[in-house]
Image (cartoon, rainbow, N blue to C red; front, side, top):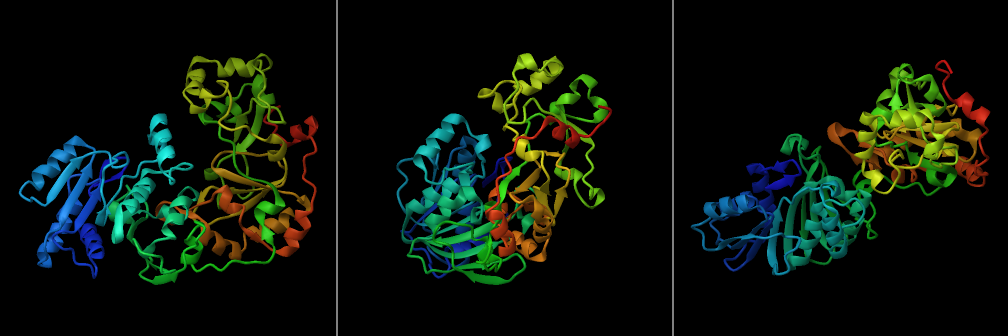
Length: 475
């Protein structure tokens, strides 16, 4: 079964059997029932349905396998040639307009991120599917297409990454699921596909009116019963047992900015050690820090790198004829080649960053945190001298006099529990912090009431102030 952008990844036999058991739980298929595997590969799930029928001495239903890869189609057809009730179709499941309807749908849809799709494919999917929003993944579209093919009271069992339960991109799918009966969400062992699929989850859905509840089996063996939000918002807080704090406000309400750090798209060109930067370039250089450079080993946030920034304080890209020695450096053959390979140059000048760095906000006292971490921790850049790179988030409060109290709150046990209940999981149990999640962190009224009415710190930074925020490094 295809289940990863790295190629053809068979679903383990024991996982297939577990899913087929769920598919036919208290719903034994008849000989005229129709089963669909939408992306059947070489037929692991079809084989699993046959095993179940033989074990249970049940009639073999009509089984349709759809697969776009000709090699897999040939293998599956040869594998099931003696079964007249099994049909393997070579077709693109997401483009096929004549798919019919089914009593049962089971499978492991392909996990293909938007970065692997052509512009033409993205445009087609966005036009056709409600779930093709933001940085979508094809497995979300497989969910949508399959749900539309279920007969009344039909059942679907898919194995996918658990991310659809909480990532922002999957909100349209969660809204669709709120109208269905989500029988069970089973979070299975992380090593099911070795290191190819992070946090796999088996989801069982019936095409019935929602019961109002969903059963979730956690990886520690415990089971919780949740009420999925009807607005498509994240299910993770309910799954983790988090209860919202209605008092106070949110971090986003009391801050000028809660953002990911600067993405140059070519750190090997723009980020250098002080010794590696010529003196003529130092007026463009700012101390910078990455997530891997933050931790208990660097509590003082000592920067060992400088970032060359071709922007002024207002976020304007400096004209080429004013770059002087920086233009000469960036124009060197090896450097320019790397810069012109970036996707952002399709719409921006060749030496621009992926995103405009808002230095007027960045070069202030601010709170920093890593984007991926085992245990969230927040630090204060008291001098406002650091330019965070794209693996760091920075938080600029409206009321700078409360920055220490705010950082203490963010490092509290309550916020740690809140983040654990709201953040996306990545490998090895680490959390991925994202700006839209950070902005929703609850803050107590004594912080929110003071800062919500504060003045947005937009006063233009003086050049001499900026100079004090830069490390000297011989300048």
